[in-house]
Length: 219
Image (cartoon, rainbow, N blue to C red; front, side, top):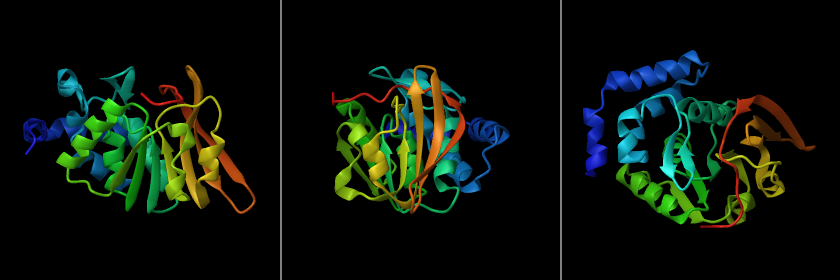
């Protein structure tokens, strides 16, 4: 077994339970999401220098000017995605560390994850393999395009912020599907939930957030 994965046994369960308690205090109620996050070893998805802080409710750097999201935000976005029912086929835009991917993979039947930074994608792939999560398909590509080959999706979760809603992602959402996405520039961002209806899209503002920007191209 991967040495870093073995480290979960050395990580105080009480520390992880405190993380979950904090997330619950902030309003996340979906018990399945909380249970999965309790058992998912966040420390293997961060750089070793930050492993001791992996269960603090804060974002951490993962290199390439990217971060692993604050645990509360991971829980909240996942809860929003699943609030109206389970999602069998989910697109994730921005694999990043792979932590959000791992949470989704334990709650959804199939996850399609797109990442523009190749070294991050490869690192995330190894972490998912260490956890024996085999229901994730990954692509090195510009996330703003989505992944049309497997569309439509009944859920799309975006972990980086475009200035405006990407039309390609809206079009790849199935009727009744849910898109959870931060939208805006700099620190003026709003987490939104968009539901595709028979007549168009219903957009709901959730709360202010701060994410790295969604950038075009691949690296």
